[in-house]
Length: 270
Image (cartoon, rainbow, N blue to C red):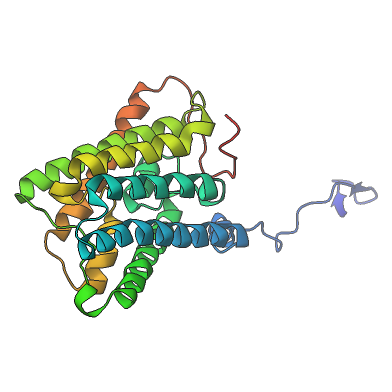
């Protein structure tokens, strides 16, 4: 409450409206961002990405190792089923927690479409690469000596062929992810099935040629653990370009607003 003096010294008017204290500034946007990034819910999301990527890479790469060490007992269709099934169950398990990216290309694509916060991208990518490295390291410990098999991805043909194939299959995957993951008109209950089936089909087609990575973390983890970097630039650049292209093409076809995938909304609510 402040006194306001008029021109006449014999009259004093009281200002009954409190003025904001100049010393009590509202929290800045920078502080709010820091609190959100290091909040418990966000750390839970990051942990979800670490664990989800770990289980995905462990299952898929274990199938590759077991198949190689046991006279092709699984065959390429069997490996494709493992990858697709792993993606499906992990999407249903963790999408409501972290968004179930498990893939730096997917995270970057969502960020370019402004359906995922840009400031969270480095944390998600770091979590995904760490999860992949942990899975590859676990397999290296379990299958050592004569059973030590490189479970990463290597082009079987030319680099150009591998680059184009990885671009196409990642475009296809991200196109489906954008449809079932960001469009309010999609049937949410089928998200895991649709994404897992797309991965299965892509591995069936491209597995014998490129390893069907579609995921920079899937290729980086085993490459770092095994110190095997042949063609690694293909598996880092091509999936990212393919995912961004797939997301943008779907967004151009979209007629209504985007769904905010950062909210913890259950996939069972369409």
